[in-house]
Length: 213
Image (cartoon, rainbow, N blue to C red; front, side, top):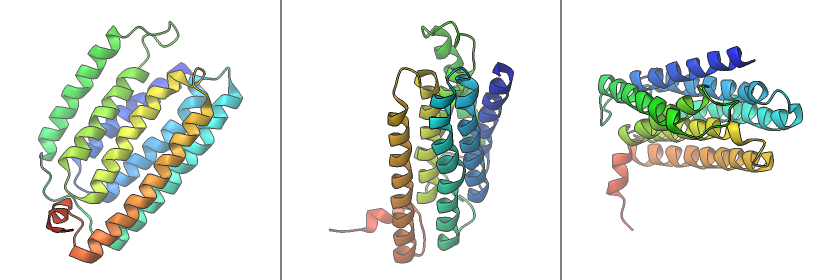
């Protein structure tokens, strides 16, 4: 179980670098969907001794993060008729370098946290902190509204991963509530993207500065 979990976490690291390196928004959506599927499987591996609790978190996460939210984002992308993030505030190569620095910092910080013996030495905390940093970097350096939605989703994936070690301490209904909140937020953001695109023929958030009360 632990070996399979470590494989998943390594893939999460690689997906973080992939989303920072690519300009193709559709590829980022697919990468975030893959992150969602992996996060849907992870609770079963982390809490194999508590199958009911694991399934209570796994199924909503798998359905929402792996399929429902990516479907909404693909539909918003088709409506907006865009393919690439052309002019990010920070270039793709510097984004990867910053992502690598954030990953190194996440490993250092996780080594100083007081963890339970069963989580000591695991990649869960480094992967969670690295994903949170990658999401924040993506959210703050991309111009397209849909890219910022994706950044928010990546950031939330990191928080969800961090919460995996707390599932037995925090009632899983809270986790489900957070997933539903995320689903509603993505749904609303998809509507906002559609309205921005229809009003300005572009989904750059710079257009919002042209709005007046």
